[in-house]
Image (tube, rainbow, N blue to C red; front, side):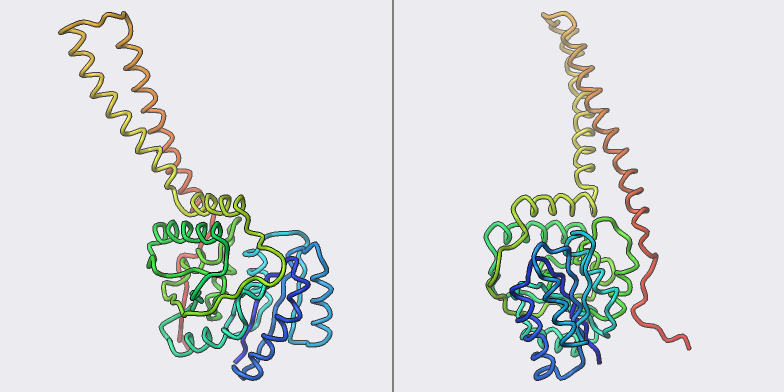
Length: 309
């Protein structure tokens, strides 16, 4: 059995040696299975790739890739998966917050649970900052609403998946990939196993408040039409309200009269056309969202197992 450990690397020259040694020791002494370590340098600004080259020279089980520019964590992961050969693919971060010693828990769970395609590490206690924890919480709420998955399912970047899952992920050509969301499109056989989460030893996280807000809105716009639906509903409400108010002011005009000439007409016109405009935007938005779904080029079905010989 071959396990591929795929790690996106960004400005982690100080942690890579320790990461490699701990992954190697875990597989050689605990898992006792073959492994490969696929390191993808996401255009780091430090000497991360030089360290990766040294690791490659010392151990042929280390595969190294350097991207031409910074594409982001998820694109780097997809690149690493494309060059992996394992029967199972494990993804983890490069900052040692995912202890390599916890990998056997992921392996044990997916080997014992034939019904699961993906096992994701759920942290006992997250060692992120308050802002990032809040951002993760909000993102999980939106994800559960959009994809209809169990809201108790924890989506983290410490995970193991079967080979066919990776192959299907690589078929999905999306401009702003998010591995957790793509996994929910591939399979609903996803479970959690409890793992430790260590404090960051070197540097600081690249997930600033600005980055988290940007990712949050990207997740909404890429996976749901909620903003457009919200606008449509406001437009529909304003349209109906204009009709009700129109009837009211018309009755008032003939019963008691209006002191300011033209006031009723202006109010009715404004209410009617503003409501109609928002309603129209919502309807157009619905069609645009359908176009967005079509351009993702998602396959019509994905095979988990087959026996056609």
